Length: 115
Image: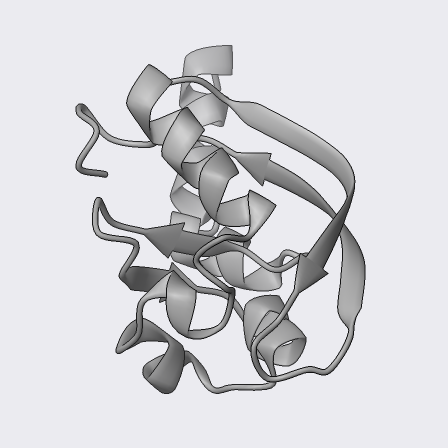
């Protein structure tokens, strides 16, 4: 078997993107241009203490205040089409009375700023 055949054989058995995303131990949230949540993983459900179906019917601002630094990072990444990282960000959550320190990695995906 050639190395190319080996590659394709291995790729055929590889998990798809949804399986990989779901297996990540860190919360992952995908939002559209209006900050509507379109995709989450199990770690995001645990973090927000809300099921994925309810998360996906909501805007990010339902769980994170609109004046949060996280919302500003998402906006900046989207407008400039750049990756943005912030470490030890104090994130206030609407459903919790206290903030949590998080590391955030924001990256636009797709062909345009609508993704």
